[in-house]
Length: 451
Ligand code: C2O
Ligand code: CU
Image (cartoon, rainbow, N blue to C red; front, side):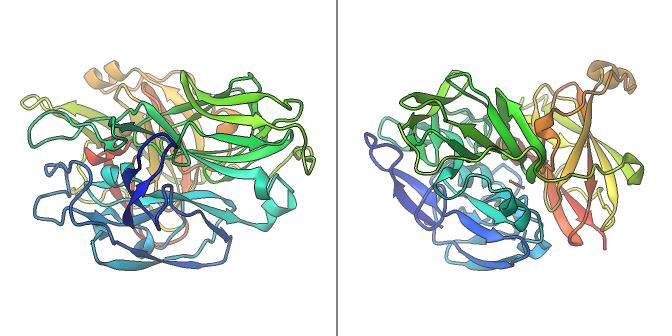
């Protein structure tokens, strides 16, 4: 990790950013299921932060080094000592070697900073990259590959007129934390509104939302749908035709787009009113694409009856009556309070995420993959006054959520139910909202897998 001048656009002067190995996003790591990997992560960043640190945030006290890092492989089934626990940070001049066993299905994971209290700043500065796991099941499907398979890492930022990063602040002296960041500049693979020359054939795009807070609602300007073939944790059972794809922070979508029949056209990948990138479709292709397989990878539903425990966990937002500062918590508890979620290694649990706020929170659990059972509407006001859960009819997940997930959108007024098998390793992990500003406000809790 180093501070590096990065070019986001031909016409913009270089931006000072924090990079893994000199690039933003960092280098793409490509590996195979079952083949372990050791990575040495070296912190060679300056000792002063590029962005405004809020020392009042949990874990970011002025008694700690201002610049601290620790890398988390998001979606990895990783032993606890290599998982990048937020308190396992290390300062400038130090390094760690982490072990990634890769005992999991083919998918696109991503690595990013997770240092307690400053993760939102470290990621905003540029510390993220993708990590592809391949396996034989995926290979046998003969999906678009080589030059026809491209990761698209989406994120938003704010820039000064000089092309430098701006991280917004609250204006409150000594307490710069803001509850959300929404930039007006959209970057794809670290570039501002780039274009890609494509051939008139099918492509596979591995899309990641690496933003701090922003949600993307992806569509193509020519109105053609995507064929979605995978989610966070790998392939769907079958391709799903999607006119629009929603990605909250940290979610991934494995999309194919067929540019056949669009020779000579220009097509924009957009999110609501934002244009993200342009595809320029050429006249000929060097290798015609095969049709997509009708089925991809069987996914066995985990039966609800196998759950050893059901936990109802609330998502909360409070306003401090004195300071008016916002506080966001999971199940009413702060990060430093004793661990309350202690699933047994190998056990199945249902987590019912009861959202008492007015926002959608992308909830991520480390170590595991899970399935979404349903979302049940409930009356949050009634619950707040009388404690009764007046439940409506459950809403089943859409086909694009029918695969394995590691991040789920917990919508307001809903109880989002997920079913999880806590397999892999015993030890201390965490779960949190992936809106990084919310996580900094302690919407982040440990859990402990008990062996
Ligand atoms: Cu994307 Cu706790 O991580
Ligand atoms: Cu949140």
